Amino acid sequence: MISDPEKSVSNPLRILFVINPKSGHGGEKKQKNLITERSESEKFDFQIIVMSGDDKERISNSITQYKPDIVTAAGGDGTINLLAGILANTEIPLAIIPQGSANGMAKELHITSKIDSAFEIIIKRKIQAIDLIKINDRVCIHLADVGLNARVVKRFENDAKRGILTYAKYLFREMFLLKKYVFNITYDGKTIKRKGVSMTFANASQYGTGAVINPKGILDDGKFELVIIKPFPRIKLLSITWKMFMNKLHTSDYVEIISCDKALVLSSRKTTLQIDGEVLGKVKKIAIECMPKALLVIIP
Image (cartoon, rainbow, N blue to C red):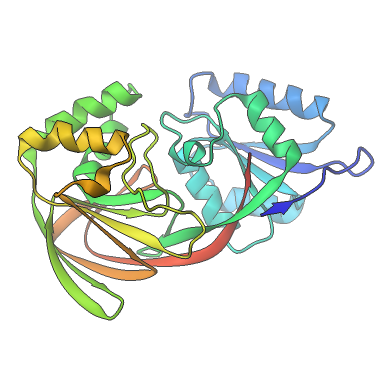
């Protein structure tokens, strides 16, 4: 953990804010106004980028030219994922102003969605190095999975409504279409075979809903977890859900958790893969590797 002192007025803190206008309920104009007002009151040297679609190169170029002390994501998990990929293995820390529908990573780090509170965290600049996961050459900062939850996320993405109730609606619909997979998993020099309805690749511990999928999740331990949900009777859904919200999922007979730093998963058939809330399509082969302490983040 690193505490970095505030810069003086003569040498103000340089912050690049990246706003995702599709996140949150306030809209682009309100977000820009709030960020500008607070940044000016704190006498920051700042720039704002509003995301428009194909943003990676534009943001990377801005970082190279502007040389910010901090890059701040004003958006949800997808925005954070994009910036994590850009900032991985650099000395520039990532700050978060949660503006998404779930804000899973922000909740993992105990960052509230209030802009004033997020700014107080930025001002104090307490920095922690955390792990990332590389999944099929894509960076994951929070949670990724295949199977049941990934299909729910896919449906959720296509719905104009957001929030826990919308997610729950699609979860219960999927329960009547449960697909089973056989996963061949290679890790620590051995290969095992498991049947499952889903598998989560977890750097963190919980979804934005507060449901804890990975009670063993630690962001900076140099490992990730494979959380396998085995086929279960539909009557057990409420029991499994209750255990998730009570942080007791590991006690379920239908759950197996494997900690490792590298793994290869081969699915018996193609299955939807989602990373940090973004659906990437169907895959049969998933290569996962931990990137130890690859990202600096600003935490409360």
